[in-house]
Image 1 (cartoon, one colour):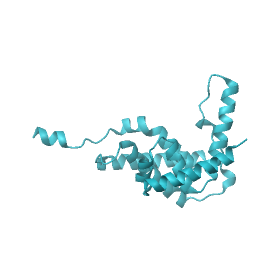
Image 2 (cartoon, helix red, strand yellow; image 1 turned 60 degrees about the horizontal axis):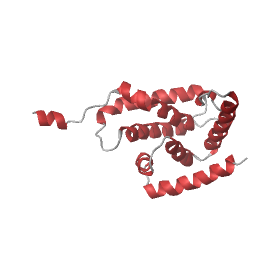
Image 3 (cartoon, helix red, strand yellow; image 1 turned 90 degrees about the vertical axis):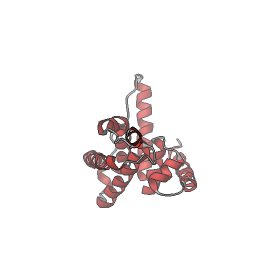
Length: 170
């Protein structure tokens, strides 16, 4: 009986999942939705989906991969459901944390704004890859989340980085 209980997969605590992965969920949502109110709504949809899916987590992948895969799918669904006018899409300054040095903070904020705007102008498929890479996901984790091969992830990320470097050059 003890062996059976020990081998049973425990359901992760939702509050702990949110504490550990909530910021990443917010950043994935920010890549897909530029309007703050809609982004907040998307985050809530993702959190609800994560909460509903936690009982199905089997440990086949890391919890991070599991959560980001849900965030990815919900974000894609959201984009497909709500194509909206780009005039209303603006950078949210709350995505940049201020530093102690004001001049450095302004410079970092401007660079982060340029990066986010460049990422937001990319095609959706590239945006998703870049967002997941910025979250620290490995090529294999991204492949699992998106549903493509790790080699394909590497090629697409290389192209996306080249495009971003070109856009970000002073």
